[in-house]
Structure formats: C-alpha cells, structure tokens
Image (tube, rainbow, N blue to C red):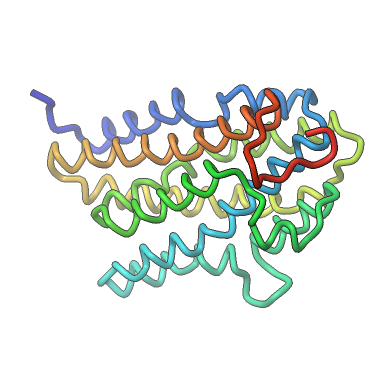
Length: 243
C-alpha cells in the first residue's frame, strides 16, 4: 500500500521526476547546447516552441477560470501578464517572436503557427485539455516543470552563445527574465501543492500530473528530432533551407 508522504517527501518525489524525465535530458537539447544543430534545426525549434509559448497564457487563463479564491487568482494572473505583457511590445510571447526573428524566421510564419509539426499542436492542446478537465490541484501541479527550467535555460543560453555565431544576447532576451519568473512561480506552486495534496490519492495524482507535463515537453522534442534531425518532415510542416 502506498504510504502518505509528508510535505518534504512529496517535494523530493516531485524533484526526482524532473531529475529523470525533464526534457533537458533529451538528445535534441544536447545537440542544441553543444553547437551540433544547423541553423535550420534551431529555426524549427523556435518556430514550434512559439506555439507552446503562445498557448501558456491560454492554459493559465483556463486554470484562472477555475479558481474560486480571489487571493489565488491574484497570484495566478501574474503568469498571464508575464507572457502577454502589459502592452503590445512587451512580455514573453513578444520576446519569443523576437528570438525567432533573430534566427531569421518571418514573423507571420511564426505567429500564424500553420507550419508547426502535428505533434507540437497535439501536445500543446493536450496540455490545455488536461488543465481544463483535471482537478485544480493536478492543473497547478502540472506547472511544476518550472522547478527545473533554470538549469536548461542556463545551458541553452551559454551553449548557444558559445557555439552559434548567428545567435546574440539580444536574440536570447526571452531568457533574461524567465529564471526569476519561473523561480517565483514554482516556489509558490510547490508550497501550494504540498499544502493541498493531503491524501495518498491526491499525492499520486500530483506526481502523475508532473509526469504528464514532462511527457508533453518530451514529445515536442521527439517530434523535432524525428523531423529535422532524422529528416522525416511531415506534410504541411515547415521545411526550411536544408530541412
């Protein structure tokens, strides 16, 4: 019989999921950070990742609509502001578009999201569906991949600046603000989850939710690897020069 964990044990179990399943372990990210990707492969990553970034405030709006506590709503809505910004030329989505443009992609190609991989679309939509249909506890727990994002951001920025002469700090400006935001958000979310996961069933659901979110991110990397590294670009997806 699975025992009830104390809060420290639950946090350790959540962090173990990140240590073994977070997408910084994916071969694609090793290629990226070690300078072994072509420009086309980096462009494909930026193009497809944009759809995920653009849907984050949609996901968080879905969660927000389910929160009855005003204090929690005030905290959670900051996530939407971080991505949408306070005005047009602000926020994480805007900075991701600038990243894609810095890699040589056309803005309209990026924002229309018509040429992304099918798996990218399916994975992101599955994540939004998860947050709309599972318990609020599970939806919030699924955000805890932010616990592990600082490491991958550090590897990504240092590796890309060191290995790709067409990448600048301005291109990677998206990543300047994210570590602080992600730390703030994950610090709050993990304490909230530990407080509200009070039964064995709730704790196991929390662990499964984080595993699911890791799977969402891993599937996107798998699709990019299959299409742009192994050369199996599906019909309708962006091909780019050399893809």
